Length: 433
Length: 143
Image 1 (cartoon, rainbow over the protein chains, first blue to last red):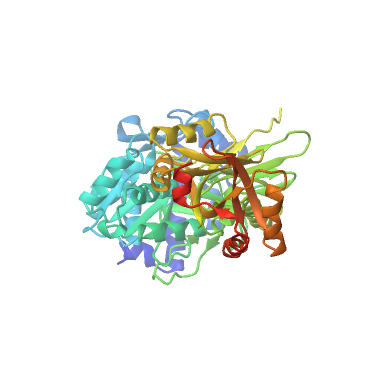
Image 2 (cartoon, rainbow over the protein chains, first blue to last red; image 1 turned 30 degrees about the vertical axis):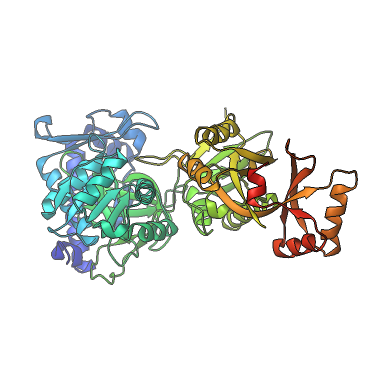
């Protein structure tokens, strides 16, 4: 059942031996072939010879998204351009896009790790994967595609959008595995229900959802409504794409492909490495990447690591579900709030759908949070006092979760924007200039 | 007898009330009585209509959240103490009124009141004991 037993189940000692060997090679390659790294390492007074143990990685400088932007487009490539066979890029929603280049071997490794991910979700060569991640420069679509192909499964490269057709194909082709963002999976579930199709008419057994943050409550919702096992996939374009880590059926953390990616957790303020189990910012280093080695990339994703052997038999290190990003963390009246906390509170209330939007404003000098949720028949009453009680109940649940009072607004059903990719949950209207 | 009222959730946004009424009009629904309870953020549109099933379907297919619930429709004697007398019957039996709204018909001189009671069965009993006229579906159709 384990796709690559040797790599995924080797002892920690063996793994560390392998990692130190690969890490040395990666540092050397970066230093010798990428001018950016040579300059960075020289400035920090470190060189490849300073890496003798895994802990020595802490001496090396971090790579940030800003660094990748500065070297846009091809400044981080470590091989002659004719060896690059595929290029991907971020959408650049928060600034200049960052580019990722792959050699043939890189693509093979990418396929290998996504094949492991699909295998972890119970996928085999017999499965039909309906891949609704967008195809194109975004890594989601082709990443899963390469992995499904490697696994020998049938990939349905339907890409994102056109929900009516998605449902038609899902039913007619009897797709068994669904891959998309969790918010789109929810939208699909809603649309399936609306078309009067029962989940028994579909062949779905599991879903591999990622590219945005989601909660355990959202998992329950998706599993119930689609009749599937839903697992969490993690990855980022800068490192490779999806497949860096994935949950197995035990659903207790995401297995990092740690023979290809070396993880650390740091305190994002002091930048010091944190011990196992502590929550902090995930930092990743590519161990085997040829086209574009990335050393100590600050992901801004908040998680913790667990090195215990998993019940599934895999020994690869597991990261906990991402609970926030250092940059989507909202600071409201001095209190740190993550959208995922609000989602958790909302989903504790019977009848509420996980379609919500958080609007932060500063009308005078004080921040205010408005949480908009959609009214549903079970959350609607002809009596005003009932309606007020419903809003109060939601506000109280959120208060319990984040420690702040929020204004809850019920809005009309299906009036909040639905996304086919990453959902926009937070609208920050405060002016900090 | 109890009458089914339909309630519609209306966000306090430009054009939403018009949209709901428009949907009903296009579906050929006749509105017998209506009231709106509102806050700064949303309103609850309550309606007595000619065809509940059709109205509900039309509204729901236009993404409105709709609920049906029981109300009493009562004829109020047309004199200054009319409503007071009727409310007195309920008050004597400690039956709470959640809300009421009134409308008039051109076929009768009486005023007509829609009542949502905390305990509708008890309310019906109290009103019947005093021979208040509770309208039936048929009566409403003929208004």
